[in-house]
Image 1 (tube, rainbow, N blue to C red):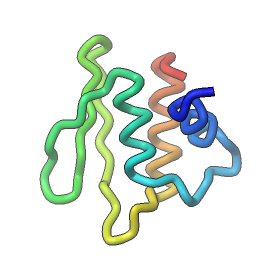
Image 2 (tube, one colour; image 1 turned 120 degrees about the horizontal axis):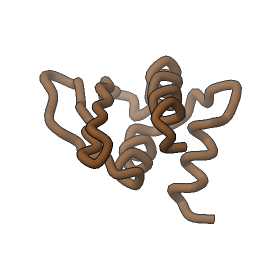
Image 3 (tube, rainbow, N blue to C red; image 1 turned 180 degrees about the horizontal axis):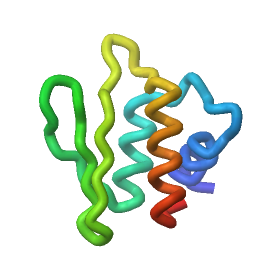
Length: 84
């Protein structure tokens, strides 16, 4: 099983994991065809050109752990758009 597949499984896990790292989430989104665009401040935009989809997330700092609400939002977006 690939690193990205393991990360996707963690993203889909219930209850939502509290230890998903920013680098892990970013890697999954890039693996699924999203490209990170610069947002303002710590906001990051991920755009999927093939499906014309946009995800906006807050890059965590100083901790690398992504907020559980953000993980849930990303999961819902990916599920609704047939990417997972």
